Length: 282
Ligand code: NDP
Image (cartoon, rainbow, N blue to C red; front, top):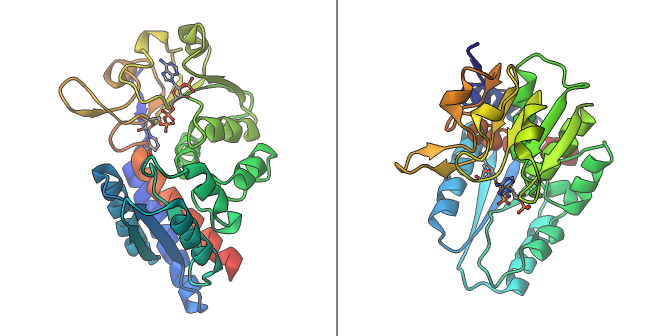
């Protein structure tokens, strides 16, 4: 067996094109989709992520409104900025780039975002809606994973999905999305016993751990679909995911590469959320 490569780069490009068409329609109707991007401090990785998001926004016809603040901003000042953006009609989506400097309470900041502008899907209101099976904004990374899974053409109903990682931004919403799609879901984490045995029963594996070789090819059920969210550097400094990609090519029926899999889908999904927010506001 040779796995089908799930090309996130190509799918993301086509989604961005679709979003660009929708933005054009909105603009023709007098609505200019606007995304406020809040970046605090000068973390180099965050700067790169923000640059990519703003570039994608520009390409799609979304106005990226840049709010850069120094690392010494106070909690109150940042909260005030979020309140101002909540009240600004030009702003349809608000993105606060994480991580925030250690003196800031990120949870309180994210909770202050108007759930109708929470295009990252991190607000408890949006997570709660997802948990109840009536989603509004879904976190971009798991949303992108679902779009990639859809390209396999396989129904998820009744399939056994194993999600490895339970973060609020990837693992948990991913498990909820798969549950809502009628998969039978096992959610694993660092305290899980017998990870290999869980993986061996999985028709679908989603790895969101952040560790090289967290999921080994020898554990995989032949024909499983593998979505690799992880972004790591291997011993040679090369970007890689959480799974043994090369070795899995022989066992999996479909697999995402790193880079070029989930990564580009995250940004495209974010743009889909911004358009959705602009439509809802208009
Ligand atoms: P977190 O560090 O928040 O969560 C990691 C999860 O993995 C935790 O739930 C942890 O368990 C679990 N875990 C750690 N070690 C093991 C182990 N040995 N076996 C099983 N589970 C384990 O990370 P994120 O969810 O934010 O991100 C995960 C990865 O995805 C990272 O590499 C990140 O860079 C990448 N990422 C990629 C994105 C993209 O666009 N491609 C976007 C977002 C993230 P516990 O809860 O018990 O600690």
